[in-house]
Image 1 (tube, rainbow, N blue to C red):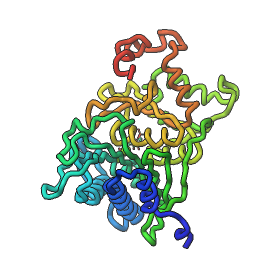
Image 2: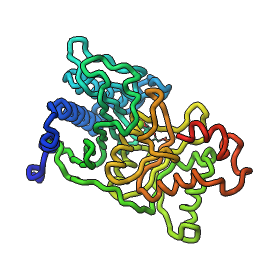
Image 3: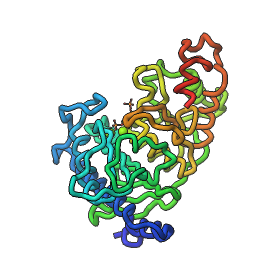
Image 4: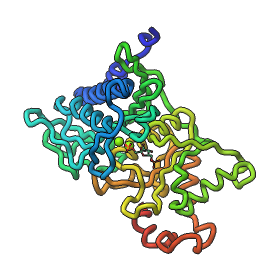
Length: 362
Ligand SMILES: O=P(O)(O)OC[C@H]1O[C@](O)(COP(=O)(O)O)[C@@H](O)[C@@H]1O
Ligand SMILES: [Mg+2]
Ligand SMILES: [Mg+2]
C-alpha cells in the first residue's frame, strides 16, 4: 500500500555495490540471506503460542544458559538460510560451542558470519520485543574452512553489522560501513523497505539504561555516574534523567538509535568468572559498529569496544554505548582517581590495581 514508493533492501544493496566496482555480489547475497532468516524468525515470533514456540527447550547452551524453544529455532533458521550460498567460509553462533560446520559439498566463500540468533530471550514468554544480531567479517583465508581463531578479529574490522527487531513492526537495521539505515518489513509483501535512511544518535541525552539490581556489584565510576543521574536537577548534573530497562539489547539499541540515550552493562563484581554480561563477538561488536556508524560511541567503559582484540569466541565484556557525551563522561570517570577515596573500593578495584592494569586497561 505505502511500501511501493520506497527502495527495497535489495535496491539499497545494489546501490551500495555500484560504489564498490570490485564487488562480486557475494556480500549482497549474504545480507539478503540474513534478511531472509530474520523474516522467518519474525514470523515465528509473531505466531507465538499458535506456533508452539514459547517456553523452554529443556536444554542449555554452551554457556550453561537455559535455551528457549525460540533460541533453538532461530539458530536453525539462521543456519539454514545462510550456510548453502557459498559466500561463507565459516559461521559462529552464541548458541554453539565451536564454528558451525558448512555443508561438505559447497564451495567456501570469503566472509565470516557471527550471530546471536535470538537476543532478549527472557522477554519471549512475556511478549516483549526481541531481536537477532549479526556481524560480518572477512575470512583470512577465503575459499577454505575458517578456524575458530579466524573469528577473533577486532570490531573495527567488521565489513557489516546489523540487527532485526521483532517489535510492533519488524525492522532490519544495517550498516555496510557507510552510515546506518533502517528497513521496515511489510509482512504481507514479505519485503524490507527503506524507512529510516540515515540514522544518527543524538549527541546529548537525559535517558540512561542499566539493570539496577546489580548496583551492589558495580565499580565506583559506574555508581558515581548513576548516582549523579538519579540526583537529577539537585545534583551535579543539574538536570533530571529518565531511566529504562527492557532486558533486550536489541530493543535498547533501537531506542537509543531512534531518540538517544546511554546503555550500561558494565563489568562488575557479580561473578569473577564473567567479566561483563554481554558477548563481544555476537553482541558488543555488531551493536558497537552500528552505534559508531550512527555517530554515537561504544566503549568497554574504559576504551572503544571496537579496538578490543577478542581472545575467545564466547568472551564477555563490559559494554557502555549511546550518546557520545555521556559515554565519554563514563570513560572519564573510569580514568579519574576514585572520588570517595581508596576505602571506597576493595583492593582488587583500585585505580592502580592489577585488575585495572590488565583487563580493565582494555
Ligand atoms: O537479565 P539481565 O541481566 O537484565 O540481562 C539483559 C541482557 O541479556 C540479554 O538478554 C542477553 O542476550 P540473550 O537473550 O541473547 O542471551 C541482552 O539482550 C540484555 O541486554
Ligand atoms: Mg543476546
Ligand atoms: Mg541470544
